[in-house]
Length: 123
Image (cartoon, rainbow, N blue to C red; front, side, top):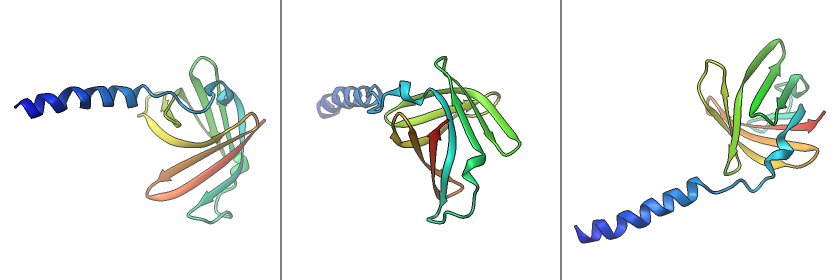
């Protein structure tokens, strides 16, 4: 029992520490409008027209995503280089942010078991 008590507090502290770790990217760089430039699916670049993907991230934590004729709106936040989006009336989703600079944004995604990378440029 003493061993359990001795491990419990450090485990709780470690969990709290990692849950509160800030993103290594400046989240303010995410704000603005982004257009797809390259969408790679399982190493193939010619399957999806990335230019039809448009994202808009507001300073109020709201986003809009347009792809072809479909539009999605909701809320977003970043944590530990992961972007979480929750569409209005939907469930929370996550993508890894590989790169975020003043003019480029790269998402690593897993959709239906397929590895995808979406590169966007600031509009």
